[in-house]
Image (cartoon, rainbow, N blue to C red; front, side, top):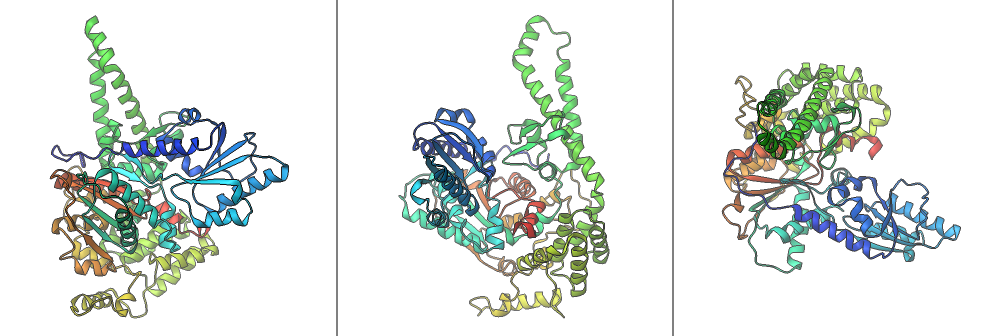
Length: 611
């Protein structure tokens, strides 16, 4: 198996404490509004809330009825209304409308608004402007971190990517800093930190300020090293098609808050919701596997299960009694889970076969390797003109641009015209956003990859340059994928056979075609114990690297526990790659992310409708 945990791996901290803290604080805040009350919950908070609490617990603390925030008139008869919301202007304006409608009809109620994870000044301003500031009490529910599994924690802030990297709105930086401070205060001082990216620097500064403001307690750390990495350091990885099982389940069914709804594609016609984590023994063994290995494993598992059932033959009464009391329940549960994952695998196979997935992967791998680019361009043009998928077409365009350091002017203009004709002229704004992000750009006249690399090379070799020159700054938002690929060996030699059943490196998560840049950087920093020797690499990535070292009192075992925080989201493929690296090198990685992402979610955030 690709990524089962090695026997000598260190133990991970117990993150269930984060759930208990969040639940206890929410109960405390609800009790601040004594008596029966109706609770209105924002839609994207319902799944996270389900993971830490349930309806019966809320009912025990005087919550009478639960409603979803729907931005329309309410029909509650309660004298007390409590709103659990994200700090969003639109939702706050709706609450103001509710209060003003009550005033107009002569209703007298008490209103409480609980913002999570924090309250923004802009929200308070709206209450003032709408004349209801004195009618509401406001609180913050510091629900920063939701453990999705024993090694994955999410801030459940998908808007972090769009707000920070597209709009330049840094309001969530303090939230990410508070999340790190929470981990710091519970699991010991986190004093060895590596970071890459502007946002990472700001998050670290915010976290450091909170540490300096608080009491310094002497305690042993359960986490040895922290990595902070911005999503815009590596856009190529989330744009690649996922081929590990968990990534494919996410692409097809959308894993939400660690839970997936298999719907009618599962083992029954009715909706089947399943929690996907290490407690699901079948899922835990295949989650990090390349999809080509999954059916073989499930078939073997089914045969083993049948053999376990067949043991009943020839048992005496006492043996049968023991079998029923000790084994039968577990076998039935395993059988149910096995059936679900077989059905899910069949659904994935059908959908991917329909879309000529193998052909798509072939051209994708050509882009990563830099071969047959004109053929790839023809394929993408056909994809756009056939109107197969708006998002898929955009993904391929961005992947082409990033791997080729921009498109030739004639290609860029041709693609743009064809895309707008196929999907609508409103996507002019989408193209402008992609250009701003550096995801889809045209090369300047006369500019080639070699010239660009030479410019960077001169800068790197100029020892007297104390800071980035104007020439280097002009290269910002440009991709240097080819140069990075050569320096870090991101694309294994294609003439070598790659056995996906016994993977030799992290490239297995992309069928042996590409090692994810984000994970390769982490591997290199751990090998070198810092950024030394990677100066040219970080310059190609526009710098903003930093390192903070100190003695955090971690035991030898804890020093092998590494926390990686992705700011702007990470994919299940990257999580699988880090698990593989951990097994190979004797580390345990904890992934903390602002949200789980994939190519669809990332690009949907950039579409004109979302801006």
